[in-house]
Image 1 (cartoon, rainbow, N blue to C red):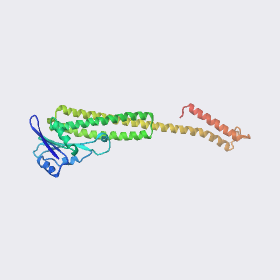
Image 2 (tube, one colour; image 1 turned 30 degrees about the vertical axis):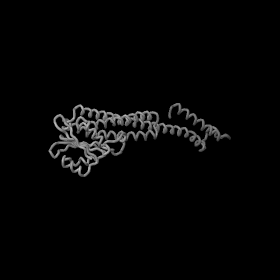
Image 3 (cartoon, rainbow, N blue to C red; image 1 turned 90 degrees about the vertical axis):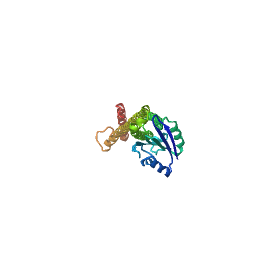
Image 4 (cartoon, helix red, strand yellow; image 1 turned 45 degrees about the horizontal axis):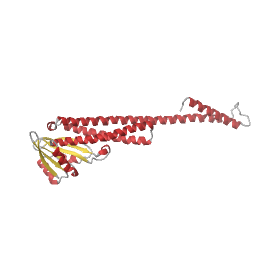
Length: 301
């Protein structure tokens, strides 16, 4: 489906087109009439990576293709393919927007409402960053909760939750960095500087900077929490090992006593009495108890 329209700018007339589910005829028409670069159709199939490319039209005018894959809600932080994308081709004479079939009418209405066709791209970028702000808010809450849990307990469940959270933060960070690289090229393009108000360009830059700051802060916090959890687990293991070493030392005392009496060592207390077995046991228990008390007093845990 292809919908066309026109908007009058300050000095020129700008044509706009909204495309969805193109037929082979529409494909060929766009290639012929607009000099549309073939990578435009290839870019639409990309479901993971954003991109920005400058191209010259058949009229030797510079244009560009901007492609940004978009995810629904928290899918942005998961290893899933994008559900849709913002894919557009812009030249001095017009703009072509490729959208999903179920979003065609919505895109047409949005272009008609926009101050200028390129403002549609601005509106979509800002809308996406508002959605991403919600995703970042949820990540922030989970990071705070995870930090609290790590201080209280350090077990397998906390470790698994932290691993999942760390993976999601890495995914969001990588995708935001990818967005930033393509959008910075978009904002620095001469055609965008001429067509899009400096105020709108600064809005996009600010949205990018906020998202960049937040996700890299969260990444550092998750790494810090991961380090805290590792230290807690190491401390627990050290405590367990010291506890086992303590009991090994306590148990070794009775073993030593039994060994001395067992090898017929002369001069030992109770060695020649009728109750020598009980004497040996009593001495072993007393020395073991004294050793345990002394170690506890020394706080050797």
